[in-house]
Length: 136
Figure 1 (tube, rainbow, N blue to C red):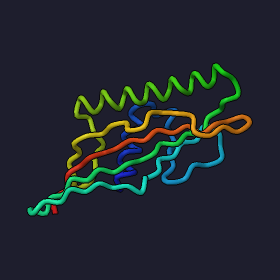
Figure 2: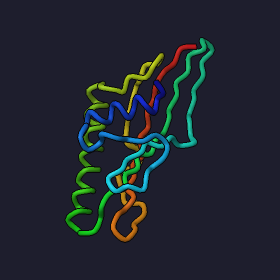
Figure 3: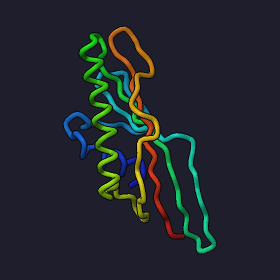
Figure 4: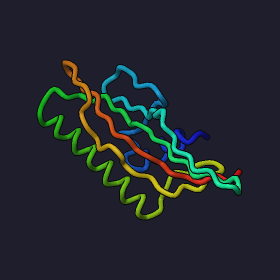
């Protein structure tokens, strides 16, 4: 299982019905679609022992209806609640299960925001960082 798959499975712990389908690296054109996209940034600290501490960044994208102000407020509420949940899970040490690695931290690095609007829907996004240790 990839790090991306692990994060997707973990995110479903927030709202499994709403996040039932989260695609990897590609957002569909459907309203109420979600995707987790790996960013082209990876911070790696390497040690003489062969151990590495790696930080990967992922953008959670959501295409959601945004016709009315109340709908947009609801979308923002979802994003705020998800960011809060991630913070609570991090504080409790409840991390994604990453194969052959020990997760040390997961956090929101860019809060949920409306990135692009179209006539009836909008693209919302948030960036999440996951820091984990791998032995060589």
